[in-house]
Length: 169
Length: 190
Image (tube, rainbow over all chains, first blue to last red; front, side, top):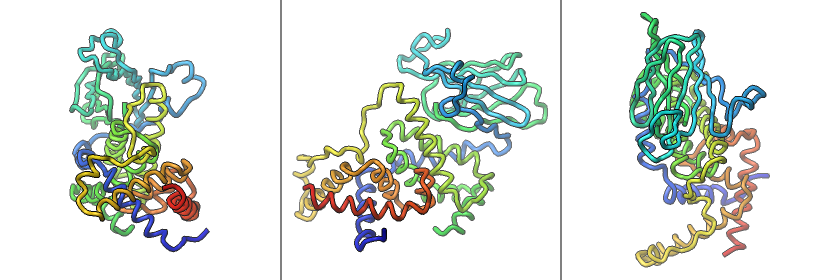
């Protein structure tokens, strides 16, 4: 099927209408520009290798429930398993939640197990928590939105920090 | 922006050039936004998807295989994030806001009508409503494709194909068919 005369005009009219009625919100353009400043060029990237929302196998079906999402990030040396769940006010796995708004809570496990300082980078800036000697860490309630972890293993010495891919929680 | 310019921008941004990054955002933020709308995300979800996609690009920009194809990279990342969002939200309460694009019940807005000064403006507003209604009557496939194509500046067919996970060769013919359908709807339904 070939283009009919007038296709270009109609397509341009649609573009004009969308630009008027549904433009990219200015705040989002600014957020996209600001995304560059989150870059940590010295850190090693732990890539998202598993997301229970997409990668469902038998093991996942057993482990994950609708309100729990499992994601894994990997570098050649480290695996970071994270469980994201909906934090219901006051019941976020024993953590007191001040706000009534449903937030997200993040529980993680570093493998091999080790102490680390974990910065949870998200919309409101960052929260720093400590992973215990078994490599476990847990956040308080977070607002939903983009999130990434920045880890500095206690025994890392001169090694760079590790940052995970961004995910939306 | 030609492919070679885009590739240059990506390489410059990977080296830390903020102005180059901003140029990439200006070139492709319309595409990313349009993809979220093609997948019918409301404002809050679309905002999360856009932000996550751009943050992800910032982290990966130095390792993109084919810098000239960063648009397709973004379109793919946005599509995946939209699908993830849709799957997660299928279990929660919908946000309630509809996108302009999906509001097929669009009617004239009396307040707006009253402040339209000239006849020309009134005609333009009526035409906009007619187009919006006609879009609302198209099959999903056509609405999705046209919404991505409506991005400013115009996306390449490669970017559109990545956004909708369609073969690139199908974009041109499907576009022609969908525009024809739209034209029929515009003539038929006033």
